[in-house]
Image 1: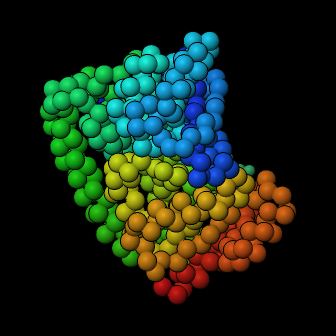
Image 2 (image 1 turned 90 degrees about the horizontal axis):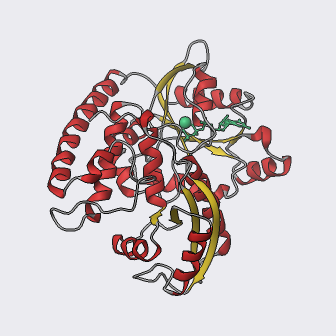
Image 3 (image 1 turned 135 degrees about the vertical axis):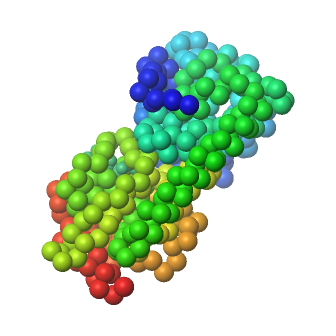
Length: 369
Ligand SMILES: Nc1nc2c(ncn2[C@@H]2O[C@H](COP(=O)(O)OP(=O)(O)OP(=O)(O)O)[C@@H](O)[C@H]2O)c(=O)[nH]1
Ligand SMILES: [Mg+2]
């Protein structure tokens, strides 16, 4: 299938209401931070955020998420503000909850996973990442189909219905299952190719640059490799892992691999699909973990990345923690970070700060390998 992301229309008319639902036992701060992140995600997906609301509940309602009491309130907002989309800051919405709400609200309802999948679908550039995304999309759609012959019944298009998997939205379960098999076969070929490339690099010293999305991984590699990888102040700018050669001293050359960014609650089927890309991290000799020092919830971002890394086989690999964007950080934060993470580097990929220290650490690793 030749689904070019470039022909996917942006969704300027996709006027959205964001709803954060937090359960009494959770912290409000965490919910607010997550909602801020969802705003960035929804904007990256191209919709227009008209309003957002935070609702406190005792529990998630199994049929209507926020309970029937809110239906009329939200319905009124939808009509008044001419909304086309409701986005819940939830990751595990059941297909039946979506159906129930869409029926009552006469408006599309999605969750965080669909937004992230949509961004990946729109950003996929290489043939491999398009296949990876389509596979994730189809695996997402599958349990949402009614019956074996059932097509996906959704209200209108927009977020969650675009990208490499979009042609499959109108089709039936058997067809999708066949397509999944075809994609898996294709992916295998790319995986074999990756393995061959890896073994050709066997004698090289390789670092994987990892981190939360938008931390500045590609900017750092560009600086070190004097290259021109795609950098953007948007989430998930990089979906393909590129490897660049970098000289850390005139004698010592290493390879640095750019990787797809992490985010809290990254949908499991996306991680599964991007498994082969993540294997580049497993195959590395060391890891540079890039952190945006100005991120509102820095510690939680670090933990998210560490949790994802812990799912991979990376035991024993040395890690350099590089706190990026220090140029835009208050002195106080830099000092705090240096105290809390004494082994880390506070630098700036943009202004080339902390780079000598970074190269020094890499060359120490190289010498002790
Ligand atoms: N102020 C400041 N901005 C930076 C710095 N490094 C990167 N940025 C900006 O941060 C944004 C994200 O940079 P990228 O290099 O695309 O980040 P990334 O980690 O590769 O992001 P994804 O590929 O989306 O996961 C861009 O707007 C960069 O210009 C820095 O040292 N200081
Ligand atoms: Mg990038």
